[in-house]
Length: 333
Ligand SMILES: [Zn+2]
View 1 (cartoon, protein in one colour):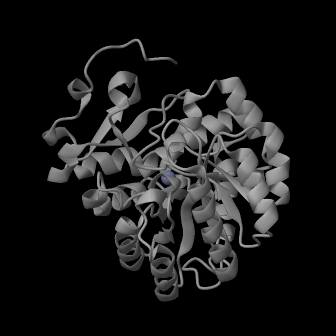
View 2: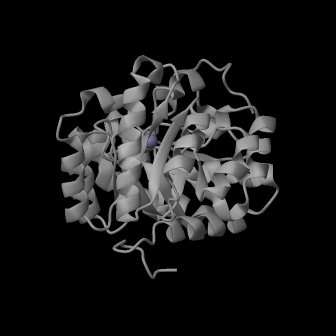
């Protein structure tokens, strides 16, 4: 279903204050089938300044919807302390520390040292978001600096035996070579928001990689998305929101989309019927971790397997991956 031709403003469809009471929302969510599916958000940014003030509401509403764990990825020295705090405050949050390729030029001379201190004081933390980017944003950032910072973090992850969340835009060849050269990474590697080629999947599997799918997959041509998905064994599939980004674009037969907007800062949450959304407006709308259920549904349809089977497998995969020594979730599966 392509709704991109619609032009009605999004605000028309936001539920009014009186209509979006917690009680009615709960009924819609908990009473429905989706509450029975347990999911792990393998990569998100609840510390992002656009939504950090909403984190308590976001976590509570996601948990009510069945998304019960969150790997919260830091991106620069500026947000690591918030990620650490969230990891300490919420049992459902796995904190991850990383220097994202977009922020490598802003790093301080002591960045690696600061990161090592954080890991020493946060034994339940993983590594991410790190990576390489040659896309429209990343191409303006010195690539050799990106590689240098990426490699140093990979080696730290290897030494600490922690899983790693990798961002890759148009640099899969380089990522593959660097992982090959510096590996093995026995604690696992997540290729986050994976949109790489199906042909490269077997090579990455040999290196212990997992493939995490986000709402971005829904903006790809479905036959291309299907080809990628079919190349990934079910025991390597993860789901993520990448919230507040990667709002799912569309998928067959989904009825509720969780969104975040500035009005939530005043304590309101909007649940919007998907059919009412103008996707030109939607680009400005922030994503919510509960929407990984929409991605799950889309992927299950393309793979022609049940949502239940896929939810269970992806939850198990993510739990296994994050069950490193010192982790909060160790021994839970
Ligand atoms: Zn991310």
